[in-house]
Image 1 (spheres, rainbow, N blue to C red):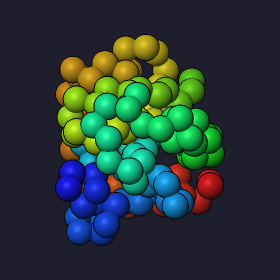
Image 2 (image 1 turned 135 degrees about the vertical axis):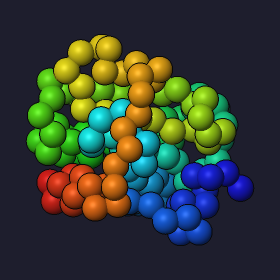
Image 3 (image 1 turned 120 degrees about the vertical axis):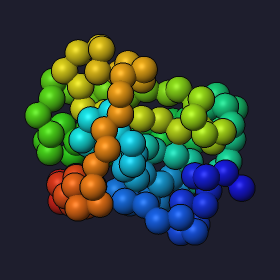
Length: 129
């Protein structure tokens, strides 16, 4: 069972943003910027493109309202999307408020936010869904 599957199952606490029968979205606890959300399928697959087609199309439909909420909640040019898949062997995508392409540079230092700050970010996004 992957780290993300444990989060989905509630075995590891998370700052949940949204959930349906196939997908789960939650805050990255080591975000690039405030508003950084991870969207994961409930199905375990290491490689994003090993997901069945219905999941590949479904994940974008699931992520769309979250991305729009992120854009409203945090000052940015747009909500960027990135599929890296190197950190956790469970397919996922990153939704990140960005102003330039460099904002998606994963080699940049990550933020360290308090539980209170993470709860504020969660509340800001969820309120706009």
